[in-house]
Image 1 (cartoon, rainbow, N blue to C red):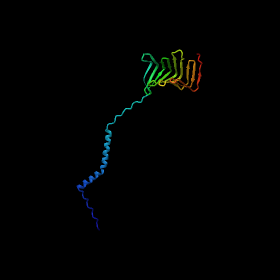
Image 2: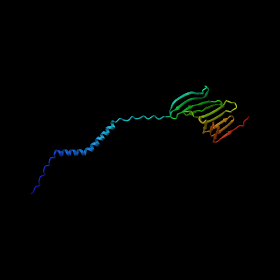
Image 3: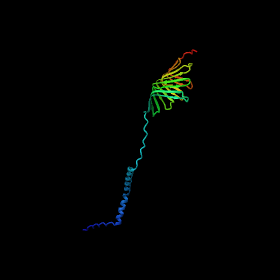
Image 4: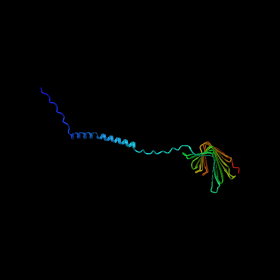
Amino acid sequence: MNKLPLPLPLAKPTLSRRLYQAWDLALAYMPLFMLSMLLLLSIWLVRNATQPEEKSLPAPVSHIADYEFTNFILKSYDINGQIRSALKGAHAEHFQDTQNTWVKSPEVMIYSEKKITKAKALQGLTNEDGSEVQLIGKAQVIQESISSNENDQQIDSDFLHFFSRTDKVITHVPVYISHGKDTFKADAMEADNVNQSLKLKGRVRVKIFPNQD
């Protein structure tokens, strides 16, 4: 009976062969090793990098009075020392967000060569440069003529909006106007002092008395 020959023992690889196998194995794992090192380096850089300083955003401007005054009188004079106007109020507050000034119980007096204008209301609201003034609640404007030959004028309404640049007074609520004995009632009004025009809107009622001269 024939016997199969025994396998020959494996020959031990040479030193050069072992070095080649180790180098080949190292090259096979080199990409993974490099990726791992890059990942660790990225994590270290993120953790140790200087964080940019957070810029503090300006606080939003709130509707809170930044200054106020109570029981005041403001007067303005011309170059000759003659009084031109005066503003009296029980309380006033200035708001930074709207740049408006709210006045409680305002009373205004404006002096000119021919007339004295008086205005008052429960509340007043004016913008920063004073070009717009709103009289709110029982608003009243009276023009008293210095000359005895001219009649006084009076405007009564719950709201009057005065524009100083165009010298206009408007209102969208009922208004009562008196000029001497003559009276005018309307649902709205637009008065233009420059063009000497008066527009009455809505239901208008007029009483005009003949001139006695």
